Length: 35
Length: 503
Image (cartoon, rainbow over all chains, first blue to last red; front, side, top):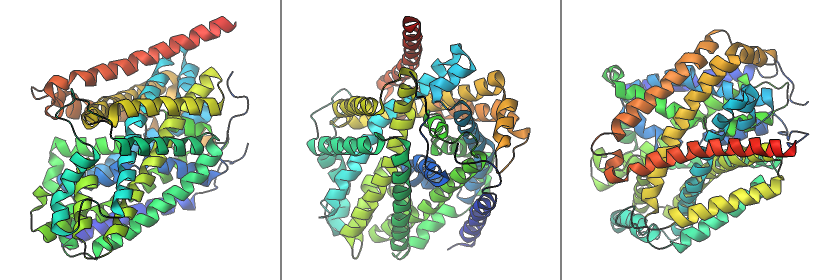
């Protein structure tokens, strides 16, 4: 693969994994799932 | 009367999977990878991520927040803001209904191909590759000469469409509890198949060339308007917002449950799936280029032709396991389409009708399924169906969705008040949002959506060629859009008269 494509792939996965990791780390900090 | 006890998801996972299932659709596979390739690879992804953060996630938080706050579907929410705004809730209901009438026909094509793939009915080897397009247009669709010639029914498609509506009925008639469970299985099933497709794609010769086309960055593209239109339109369409369904899905959430973090998780999961799907798609495109010794410009890289022509070409040329890969790929499309179809039908249409007219779930579901099936049958399963599918899609999934989305943001932002909604969101949220979010909803999201409408819609469709060269047939686009709008006013009037009659 070309260098540009590899760098793009790594950056995008860092964004998604980082974003989802942050969201999952915050689970359960507020709210209740039953009335 | 409206339901006394609101139906509920059985937990957070079913809600998030149902929302992800609705967001992940055919566009993730056949639109996103193509746009990335067309608009500068890595450079497009920058514009796309910006669109996700300033437009997609705030808009989803708004729909989730309003649904949970009012515990009603779209018309009930806008009626709650002010009686005069109720039509704005019915408009996306009309849009969702029309979309599901043709969306299910595309799923019927996928089901047709699942069966055809067992024998690779379009042929193996180079003969199959050359015959794939004719198989789709002539054998499957029996495409007529134009939209004015509707032609005869395609009975395999009619049977597949009927089967799909029966499946949808059984998923929907027991409400959110079953929808949540089915969504977990379908989304995980789709992801599992996607991994298999990716591994198969990456192990084919030429895959790396395809990936270079997909991702190689061209930063000069960032200075052009086209890339921003493409990125914002993709974000606007990919999250299944503006179609009433997300309001309903969020209204099935418990009153004190978090929705902000759920909006982030849903959006990121959807976009990660798009990015991942691009690898599966472009590795196959690279393989086709090498196998047939043709440039990328001669391969259909987007839309229906990617799924129903390019992929069958690749399946014909594969060295082994052709039938298995074919069956898996079209099952993948079936899963993708089905999760979005019951979102449109149940969240977008059935739930609003039940809320407003107090009808039972079973009867409403049966009624909506029957009417949508009949419309799909009469228009889209015939030889001229593809033309009409294209035009109805342009009218409702493009203009209808974007305009209702922009108006909804303006009314909620300036009439209802984003501060009130933000405080409500923050009361129970895992992630708190600040004042910046108010301005995104009041200004940035509606401006972004209207930019897409004007730049990619009006400016193109009023040109002498008309939409996609239809020219004389552009008028149905505006007619269909007008009908959905008028229908929304009629439904508001019917409801008002029903209430007065009951008093």
